[in-house]
Amino acid sequence: MSSLTAWKFESTDGAREALDALADLQRQQLIQVLDAAMVSWEVGKNKPKTREMRDTKKAGALGGGFWGLLFGLIFFIPILGLAIGAATGALIGSMADVGISDSFIREVREKVTPGTSALFLLSSDAVMDRVADRFKTADAEPISTNLSTDQEAKLREAFSEEE
Image (cartoon, rainbow, N blue to C red; front, top):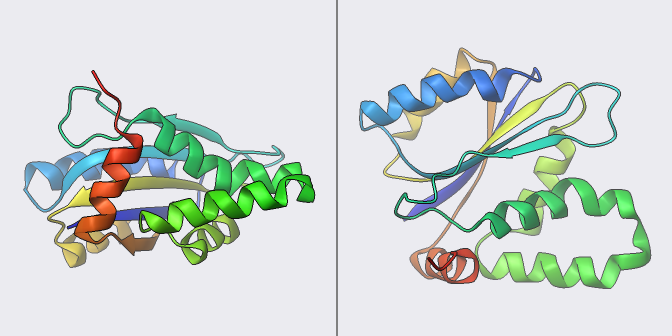
């Protein structure tokens, strides 16, 4: 079973700095990273910068459309206002079908604010207590949602790019 986890950091560089720790955890076989992306939100900016960390050759990687849709729902659609409320509701509903709940989206939106950063991971086989211990030193807070096997399959089907 895969897990989609967002780790919030109290600085704009925290997510980028955590990548080294994540690579080390993966080498120790404490987590298998299937796909990742990060956001960094500078103080004074209206929206965060986003960056996908995906290796298109990696088995299990999602298509780029997934991260764009997720970040759009979390960070950009609220800026556009209520005019697209019905469309937003439909998008959130479709994300719930693949295991990403409205509460996950709302929690990330509330916690990842100007002056912070976040690392988003689609992972499996995580030894979460060891991962959490390693990220605690970087002042990270986990926000996660677990995906059932069916939800993971739907997510891959919906967002995997065909090669």
